[in-house]
Length: 321
Image (cartoon, rainbow, N blue to C red; front, side, top):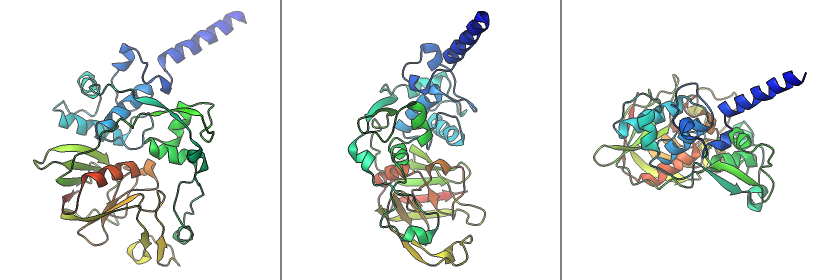
C-alpha cells in the first residue's frame, strides 16, 4: 500500500512538473519558454504567447491559453510584419522577436469596491427585452473583468483557483494588457473574409496591427469593394429593424437598444460608406472568428476600441473575400 502511494505521488509530481500551472507563465525555465507553440497546444507558454501577441497589436482575440484559429492568424500576421518564415507556429525566431517585449505577461490586480458594485444585471436574449433596459451593462463581474483583461472569464478562474472575483481587496493574477501601447493613426483598413482578420495599414500600405473578425455569412456576405469611414460612435444606441435581418423572429418590431458593452454592436460603431454596414464590437467576444455575422465586421470590444482610436473619418476601407 505504501509503495502504491509513493508511485501515485511520483506520478502526480511528474505530471505537475511537465504541466506547470497557468500562473507560471512568467516563471517558466529556459527550456519551457523555448517550446514551440503549435496547433492543439495549451498551457502557460501559450498564454504567454497570447499576451505578447496582444501587446504587439496582433490580437489573438479572447485569451484562453489554448492555440486556436484566431491565434494562428495572429502569429502569421506577426511573422509577415517581421519578415519571419510564415508558419503560424511560434518557433525560436518568432519567440526571439516577441520577447523584445520584456514586461511581465501577468500582473496582480486588486478587486475594488467599484468592481464589485457593478451594477450587473442579466441581459435578455430578445430585442424586446433588451429595449426595456436603460443600459446594456455587464451581466456579472467575471464578464466585466474578462473584457478588461482581454480574456475569457474561465481563464480568470483558472489563473486564480479558490479566489473570489467579487471580493473587495482580493488580489487576482491577470494578463498584463496595461502594457499595450497606443496605436498610431491608420491610413487604411483591410478586412479579409478568408483570413477572418481586420488589418490597419500606414500611409505606405504597411500593416502595423491586426485583429480577428467575424465578417459576414452565406446569407449576408461581406460587401466586397473599397469604401470609406463616414464616422465613429462610441457607446452607441442600436436601432433594431427586423426587416434588415433574414433570421428575425416572427412578431419582432423595431426597437431602440441602449448603449453598453452588451449592446448588439458593443462599445463602438465605425460607420462605412455603404448603407447599414460598419465595423463594431460585440457582447460575445468568445465567438469572434468562430461564428458568422450579418455582413458587418465584428471585433471584440477591446479590439474595436483600439481601432476607433486609430482611424478617422475619410480613412479608406478595403473589404475582400
